[in-house]
Image (cartoon, rainbow, N blue to C red; front, top):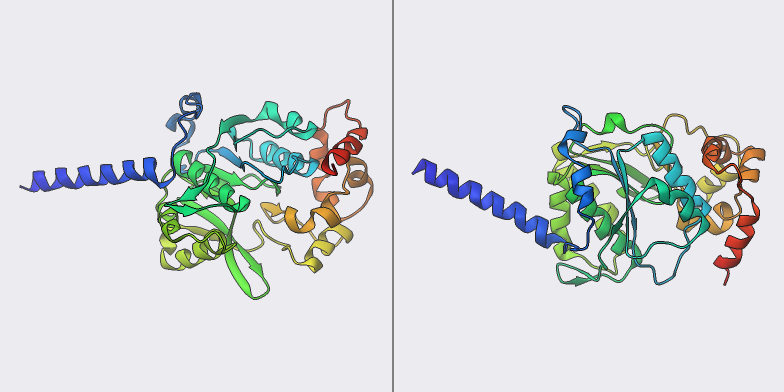
Length: 316
């Protein structure tokens, strides 16, 4: 009888895991299965739980936002600092820009599904579509997810030994866990619980499921998540005083943090859009000083006239 009960229990667990894998987010049959062969358990050192795989999400974008110099700078910083065994770029359609062509030889393109719903709940907001793609990627492969505007300054090697890791985002009157940086083993318990809560997803609530909900879950399931303080990834924040501090002063020191979320949506038009390699090399700001080293990865024949052509394309 005990053997029968044990067998039924294992069968139930197996069915549950299979149902999560197949049904929580609809699987894309066109996924490059060769990636599965190249990323195996043999690539993970002893006791390391998280494979050193980078993930980026680029969902179908009705606004046709370009892949810019800032995105190239962020991806270059991560690839050259973390030195992943693989960098997976999950996209519906590949971007068309000079900067994407520069980074493309260093990545593997994975066809992402077109996200329209989660558990029957409609998904229309672009950022929420990206949330689904990133969580699906971490669930299936494990690894390190980064937004396309996250600069990386230090290796993440010491963060690969926990099941799941996120960092605090602390802004006036709000504290959360920002999903612009997530580190996870495949099917981490915290991630599984988080995904299950998408049964109650509301597309009109901008950041509850992506920032506030994981923070609330971390208080309830603290043994399943490693929470880093706000200076790990998300400091300075997106408030105007902080953006000005980073881009117009020479006072902030990034040396003690793993990464910096550049807050592309908040800071692009006023601060990030005007940046060029020449300006970064010659103007002393906190931001420029910390990213200069990544300009060494520009091609030797780089010509800043490219910026003019890219800007014309952006303004059409």
